[in-house]
Length: 356
Length: 192
Image 1: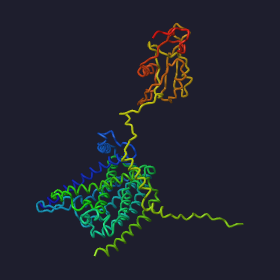
Image 2 (image 1 turned 30 degrees about the horizontal axis):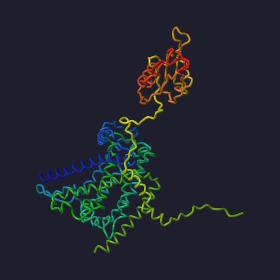
Image 3 (image 1 turned 60 degrees about the horizontal axis):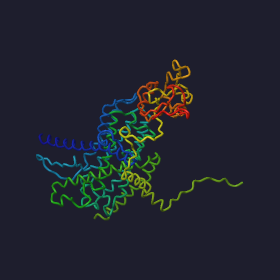
Image 4 (image 1 turned 180 degrees about the vertical axis):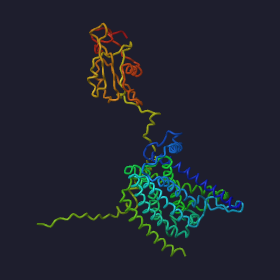
């Protein structure tokens, strides 16, 4: 019984830490997005709250918290309340299997603890894909339950878009899974140790560059970001599926979107860019003989990779206009899907001939 | 009769160069280079308005005001020319005789409805005695629209705070006579 409670306490502490870091990242992202977009467009971004506007996320959060919570007339109240939760929970739950640092273990009272991953389950990436699919339900239900034409159109678009592009995400990572021989993100990240030429993005003989491009584009589409923001196209659908939402429910959708961005960035970093591995063999701290704190370097590299992807999201948003709906569908099914399938075939043939 | 011409969409053949540009996202990368260039050479065009204000040009046409001479008498002679010149019917002048001097007039009441004013400056141009001026004030947002309905005292107060250097009243000129404020050659100048 004490062992069980200890295990529970350790897990809860890890979950709290990861949740805190993710929420902090989301807060930083809301500010960073506005700042980076502003800088790219020769503006300043938020400047009023705090020095250089750095307290803007807190002001936004307070505002959303104290806003009136409106349920539109004719809305399905249960579904309307359920949708934001359905959007947010899957976005956060995926972080359970992401390895943020090297796979160390230490023992606390006879229990093995992996400090940088909440749970190393052997179907890690499948678990993430499954839960991000559930996240689409939140968007679709939110659009349907609002009893508004804009919400419904946004939800419908989102349904079609997420289904189309999730397929590409799933197929794009198959090449990596073939090379790694495992679905566990911890094993995949470990398999890329020893310099950037071992990352699956560049690893000879089958570099997954095409799969990486397909994954990045499809993950942008899956998180409903510009240039694939058709479900929330503000010039066409007011705000898409969350048109009718206000207050904390809107905040839930907002957090879900940003948490999804962080999640797909973490997965991209773990699958293609070597996860927590440095782009050179080993770690500098390890070579200096203080390998016991080398995890700092590894975690820092993981953070750098994730933030690079997040910056890419902002960069694309500042640059590209929105796609038309038929362009989106044609691009997904007639361009991305064949490339992903071809990559699987080439990678599997290569793996068959070169790996033995 | 010739055969009917069928319009068929011409087959678009993509050249090797265009094809290469497409698959490498060449145009998207160009755009991203442009945005990154703006990020790296960050020169904002923003003026943080309430904290910093832009320099107004010399001929800026701001809030209207009634002016006084240096001895504190009003310039306005109640001629109604500003009211006639105004395209938006902002101004209403109630002209009256100066008590005891039947040939001399002044504006007994003077109203401006600034909700309608379009700051064209035609009243200022029309005024024969330069009794109207345009200040450099522009922060006149109010919560109550009626606060923009100004009377003579308010307009004079605006003039007093915006034009501290007043025009000199000329010799032999009655405070409320329309001598058009032009110095007569045969009248000796007032010593400075």
